[in-house]
Image (cartoon, rainbow, N blue to C red; front, side, top):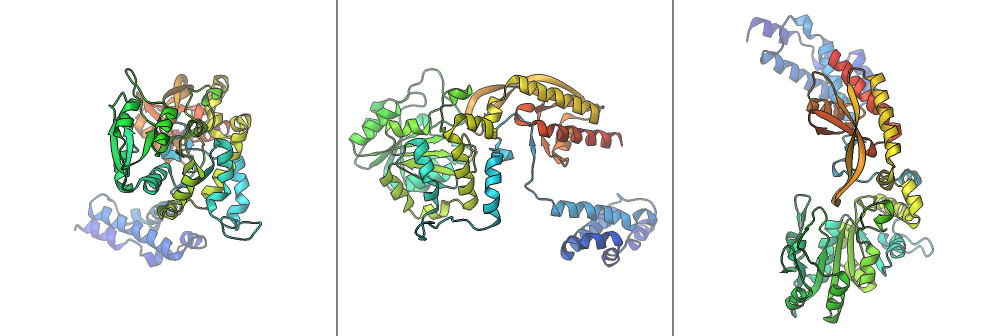
Length: 472
């Protein structure tokens, strides 16, 4: 070690000294001493290592207490800032899995606040005072909206699939078309779920064409159910054929079997009224004769992550009794979000007006144009060095729902001279406003379909701070 390095190390303040600093005493009034002490120690360890690595030059005064405190302040801020926090979604993906999928309606959140601050009647009947199952509280809404006899809820649709197969078909065969053996999310593969449930998968048909006779010929004395699976995030087009659900139901019931329909996204309403392609609805599946219909709550319903199972009363009762039911059940916050969100589906116009997912889906282009123009003006005012222009683009629903359906949209393309687009996008994410956009041809695109008017100043402010730091 050279003499200058030794001098630098010798003059570094100790943690004990730093704990007496007025700035640190201010931290200690708001934060626990062990946390503050740990941040100081980490800051000092970094400085020592930088000196040993030759990355810190100069004389001892250059490494004053302020140097250590500045780094400790950064570490303390990182430690106390919530890791899961509010973000601005300017990606154009409405149900963005990385950003928490659906945005809860404001009326739903407001209605939940009293219950979140106190107790709720999660599993107690108010009339009798007796214990009930928590899913009974939202069962009436699901039966009303789908026409099913009964309903239950678990933590997500993958869990619903596992539970239904385990409860209804363990050690027996389930017949599925080869064109529906899906893999989604990188790890959810239907054959693997079948194995975990102890049901035996029987594949029929080909990738692109499956006929009723394929199902009929596959049925044996070991068969428990026929199953249809929604393709979710992919489509097979061209020379294709699949069996209508009503015909599958007729075949299943004529042989004393169950028909399971995994709808995936789970539309409760006909999406055509919102200008989107028709997506099979849960009510249509029930009307066609499905005994159990499974779907997600955080996609087309736009609620919390959960998996819904609706169907015949006897089937749902059997599912409820399975040991996995308790392992997969949802908590009180999930029940509260789901119940309050479902009420919006009684009135399509209320849904369009109050639910962020459907509001984003149906916002007219002229409204988007006004928002984009306001964003460009705000950027010019707050970040004059940033180049911003409006472009036509396409947004998507996301999360495996309507994967091929593009929604006309507008983006504000931003760039900062001398800064790569990837660096600018990262700076936007790390800014206090936490803005997520998308990259395209060395530009960051900010899609205004998935932002709000209230977020325009925050986005412009983020770009302003980034521009100032670049100049500094």
